[in-house]
Length: 341
Ligand code: FA5
Image (cartoon, rainbow, N blue to C red):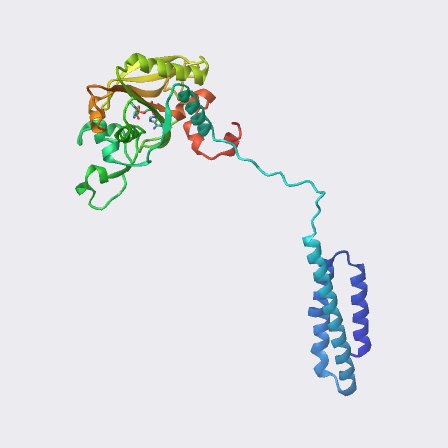
């Protein structure tokens, strides 16, 4: 090794640098020369003698300094390039989310009921046994509690707690009836929109969490005819007359008499399918005249006031309205489904 060979390395380096196309390529060339070519020169210095060693050492040091400078320049121009902003380029299109079909339906329901003077109120999703059952005339060991498979919250020594301290996920929106009447004097007209939870086996029209719309009207001399008129107006506005509606007698401990409202199945046009369980009709509302015991639990004067209440299964309404054949699609988070609305 002599200083002439170091000069050859230097010439090769400068030539390669000249032919490079970008700062990052120049940076790579500098790195390679320092790590490979120069380090082998420094490695063999120890075997050289006297004057040659000094000359080679000096030339190699000068070359290293030059390469470092070139590397620094390349880094700087690379950074400037990265920071450079071309304002003439088309911007990135932000992706917009959409309103979930159930949220859209909730808004529409609020609009329709507002036309009839109903205001929208809320209640907690984690309820206690008192509001979910006892205040609604479900006696403590009444078998009717089994009608709704409940998701109870695990609590220490639960059996020793009062009903108001025993927690559960609400199985319906009806507890809000009592919560609201405790704080507000009749006459009143409210709707409650919200999520409810049941420990059920799922199928195309049942899920473990779904949405209900509760309605409550309390005043003087309220009748079943008032209920019929309110629910008929609701369906007429929502479906623009495209579905048939029927009322059937039913049973709920918190209403007397009680009804169930069915709408004709739009998925099969009443021919019978898995969604309507081959009946041609879909059960969408539970309803009735509020039981006096419920009014009493909320401190309402039953001599003077009475009323009706109803609970609509919103998911099923959305299914009928949009001809959706499985409730589970609402909660799947599948964008191919959601983007259709
Ligand atoms: C109730 O939940 C009562 N609280 C309704 C009520 C309110 C009656 C006020 C009287 C007065 P029901 O369990 O039938 O009733 O449920 C009401 C509606 O929720 C049903 O008509 C149905 O449309 C819907 N629903 C019930 N279970 C499910 C489920 N697992 N998945 C989806 N929707 C359901």
